[in-house]
Amino acid sequence: MGNNAEYIKRVMGYVDENVPVTKSILADRKNVCAEFLKNVEGKQFDKVLLFGIGSSYNAGLMVKPLLESALQLDVLVASPAMYEQMCRSRNFDNALLIAASQSGKSAATIDVVKELKAKGAFVVGLTGNLESPLALESSAAVDIHCGEEKSSVMTKGVLATAMMMAMIGLEYGLISGRLSECAYNKLMADFNGIADKMEANIALTKKWCAANVEDWFKMNSFSLISNIDSTGTTLEIALKVMESIYLPSDSFEVEEYLHGPHLLLSRKEAALLQLDSVSMDHAKLSRIHEFLLEKNAPSYQITQEGEPSFTKSTLVIDSVKNGLLDFAEFLPVLQVWSISMWQYHDEHGLDAYEMPGNLSGALATKVK
Image (tube, rainbow, N blue to C red; front, side):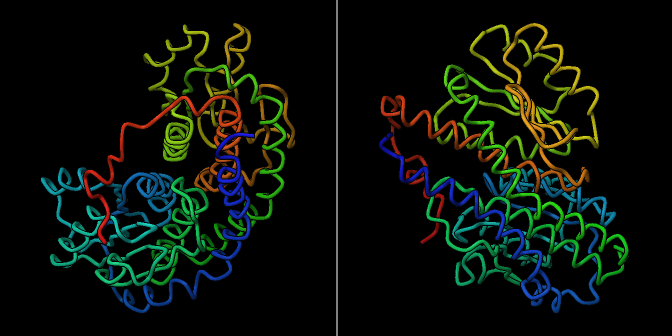
C-alpha cells in the first residue's frame, strides 16, 4: 500500500460521486439557475465568455461546442492572460461572462470579473462557495452543485463545473428564444441518458484499468488525442496525470498529433491514448489505432463504437452518441484511468519524487 493510499481512495470516491452529482444538477437545474434567470430576463447577449484557470478553463473548452451550437453565439474560452489578448480586438460590454472557480478565491479570475462588471458585462460567478469573493463580486452567483471536495486534484468539481456552464447557457437559450423547446428537451434527454449509463461505464473502466495498469506503469509519457470538440477533456486529464504522478503527458487534436507529436512513439516507453467519438473523426482515429497495433506500438482506445466491453487495448463505453455532450461521457472514464495509474504509481515508487516548493503560494494565486 502506498503512502497516499487513503487520499487516492478518497479522490476515486469523488469520481464515483460524478453519478449522483450529475443527476442532481440535471434534476435541480431550474432552482440552481433561478437567480441568474431572473436577472437576465429580457437581456440579449452578443457573445458568451467562459472564464477560468486550470480545470475551470478546461471545463469551458468542454462546453464551448455545445453552447455555440445551441445558442448560435460566439463562445470564447479564456484564462486571465488570454483575456488580455482578447481585449485588443473585442469588447465585452454586452457579453454573458461565466467565471468559474470552485473555491471562489482565484485572484486573477476575480480581478477580471471586477473589470468586466465595471464595463457592463453580466457576470455569473460559478463557485462552490456562495460567500466567496467571486460570488460577492458577481452579478449573479451560481452554485457548482457538487458538494464538498477535499482534494487538491479536482475531479467531480470539473464535471460539475462543465455541467453547470452547460445548464446556465441552455437555460438562458430557452428563455431568450435562442434555443427551441424541442432542441432543449432532446439535449436534456441525452444528458439524462449519459447520467443513467455513467455508473456502469465507470465500473467497466475500473476493470479495464486493472487489466492494463501494470503495463502503463512502464510508460515514461502519454499522449492523449481526440477530435477538436474533445480537446478540453483530454487537456484536463493530461493535467491530472502530470499533477498526480508527475508523468509527462500532453493533449492533441488528431490532425495536430499527426504533424510531429506522433514521432514520440519512436521511444518505446511513450504511449498513446485516444478518445474515439462516433460523431467526428471516427474513421481516422480507428485507423490510427489499428495501424499502431499492427506495428506493436503501445496504443489504447476508448470508443463509443460497439457494445460495452473491453480488450487489452480497447474500452467500449455505453454511449448516447451525441458528440456535443461527449465531455460528460468521457471525463469520468478518463478520471478513473488517471487515478488508477496514480494508485499503482503510489504503490510502486512515487516517494522518490519531491517538489521544489509551492509555486502557487509563492505567487499568491488565491485571495484570503
